[in-house]
Length: 149
Image (cartoon, rainbow, N blue to C red; front, side, top):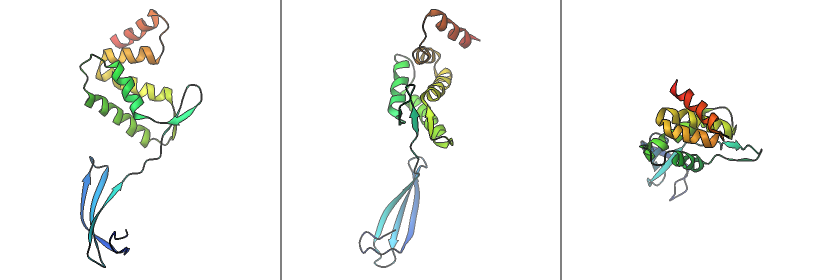
């Protein structure tokens, strides 16, 4: 790590602290040449996840799109934004930890549905009805029967 004052490449770590819930490390360093102290940050670098849409187009995973879909399903339900963000955090972590760097949008939808089922049954049915594009009341009824079992 180069000193920001003199450019020397030699420094020592004086203090390290975990930040951002353990996702980053803040390090205080001291230049061995001029004794100037400076701060560096170390963060995990994730490879972007590519989502394959139904029409075959590929785009980078967008966390906000997932949150917005869940927010619509949870409208007027006793589900906090913190619960929604935690749900999306879990999905994003699972995607980052998988060996797949391209994933079909349908798999992400199923991940949301399975987690919403435990969080709020009404939001689950709302999301499932839009996501799975129920054609009539019978499809809706089948989903409700599964939930009741």
